Length: 564
Image (cartoon, rainbow, N blue to C red; front, side, top):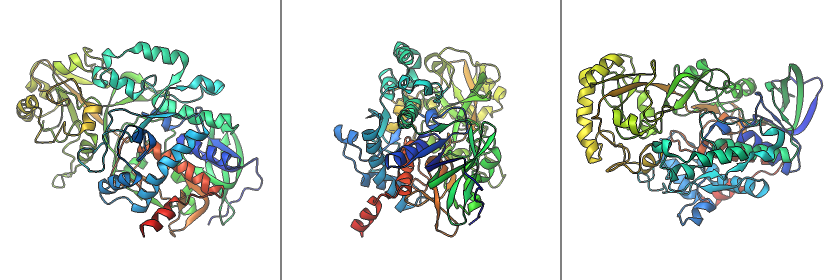
């Protein structure tokens, strides 16, 4: 192992977390409560990480909230669900380790911090109805509205999301009719919560973990970029940090945790570690692959699973806090009635209401022509859709801005304006319409997943929440942008059951741990499910700290022995 030990130390702690999302904070909190000292390093000016940009969902099989609802579930059912859907890209030992510990970690934080969760009602697993171990509700949890005012001076330094209505819970949004009926939501509830600074979704989840760290007096160093790890030749011993223009050597007596998310904002990394070229992003620029730059000089091993691809839109004059174009996911709107998605040939190519289908088919390659026939692609909708539903930042009735899309009185004219084959589009709509009126889609099975109705449908629309014909002029075409997976990576650092980073010699790198989206998704493989990313962060941060502090979990070993 590389020996680059610091000549002297400026700061010292038992456990140093690099990154202030749920994973890094969970690790620091758990290390502190195990009797150690901890420091959290955050490269940006705000804490909360990508956790604060998420919908805040936490996926936990066999949790007590599901049991209270009468849902029959267990870690074993969660294991079978993930194993069966992973497409062979997951490690069964890693799946088991995750499902065994997710509910244990969550229960620990609920017992030892102000974290208070609840089940998201009526929200099924993605593959409920398709896979026998999916459940109709109960696995997906969210935080109760969190009083961020209790953070004091840290309230303004805890990240919020520009895309998420973080004054609402999922249950609020379902009560109001879901995304389809955004214009009819009771925004007085949002105003009341914002006035009290009660945060929901990802901002609320992040705030709860920040509060737990602040309550314990754990130093949160913002503007502190970890640029190098130190080693004495046998183990990782600390971190070299640039903080407010000054170089610091911070010693970690028991462990360093890399919890910096993924590499989504590095286009060259996206091309080489994923297969996404020129992809839009919902995350901030610091999510740029620091996990690899820190760990790989010490022979850290990486692992890859299939990409997560989304579709989205960027509207004119909308910027994020860094001045970059602000993207909005189209996940919840392209599956609404009176909307379809077509490729340049004018053909539908996937289930628009289920991103696990269209995400894979976006990246389809025609080897005969060395092209991607399904990208670019366009959302096509009629005036029923624009009159009744929002579309990624456009409210019902709002005109499609110039530069975002096209409007025309006929499908042929629309296709010519957008650069789509007119005959193909006309034929696709002619086939789709009568089937949509019947509420069926034999071509791509749209509207068959209960999750699609919950996330991307209008539950009041009959006969199918996700299907409606395109018959009312004028028609509209909006070109969709390929987007990365909101910092959920294809490639990450490989770790063992204690979240120790592994080397290419298949041995753990002593003193070095990983959490959350910095790690390879070997417990999910080709599968993804809302809430797994946040659950991974919380669980892996907790496991890493327990091991570093000499209190490793024995649950996996016990379960493997029982199964033997």
